Image (cartoon, rainbow, N blue to C red; front, side, top):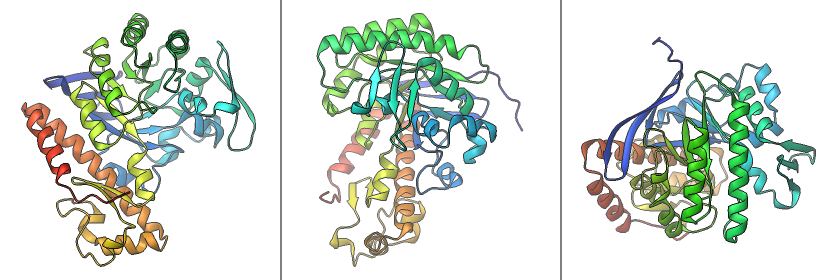
Length: 379
């Protein structure tokens, strides 16, 4: 067993244009960046065993504060030895703050300077989430990377609403930092807000840098603004953040979103897409999306992708995958999720290698060209 390092630090290994590759060192192991974090909402990556998630190449998982605080509760997870032990994942875990999920409860929440009161979608019980309570829950869970509590307004919104919300999020970031305290071996990330307004993004980044965090997230994107608007924002937003800290784009995304974000200086991402799509019969491949329920796959003996080494591709035909999906067999979601997670991690490894070798532009060109000539199903 190697010696435990006390603190979490980021080592930038190479850059190629704006793209970066490095390592986040944590007491629970290295996180290679750019990193894609599979989402384990309720302490499980749906349809996957933790060992299988690790086999796809994942270094870190995301857990969900909102869902876990409601069921089974953070207090229960703490009594049972913490989230790593509870879900049998000994490597790093990042927990979100619950802010985004609470925001999406629209009619069921009440927002004040103090925090948010809301009704549980599970049983209708009333709860309050504040920066202080969010820090307490994430401490009980024992996550390695903790996110500060923020409000994330849905876009489009008018400039004044975005500015007011961002400034409140910055006050909440200050309170989160205060409540987090000094926890060796655990990191706290701040979250930049400001919608698609460049000056508000800069103001938010300055406020976060003044407070001081172990990493910085670009929040409030991938909320319906469209890819071009997101990329336009990422052309400048990461540049407002410290070079020597990891930059995390929350809730992104599709393969070309991920590649575009890394090209613009992002180090970490998470998304439910690989697992959610897997359960609904969609497989992401080098050539685009294969919709396995389509009749054209019923007699097809080929794998989803003949170059892929995941179990779905190396052991099963499209015809089989079509059959088990149509028959509502559990193995369908298992195999397609495994494939999707494997493919997403393959993209990350490809980018890490290309950035390190200084060939990222050529890698991107090939990535887009392969998809363009693809074998894409209508959704």
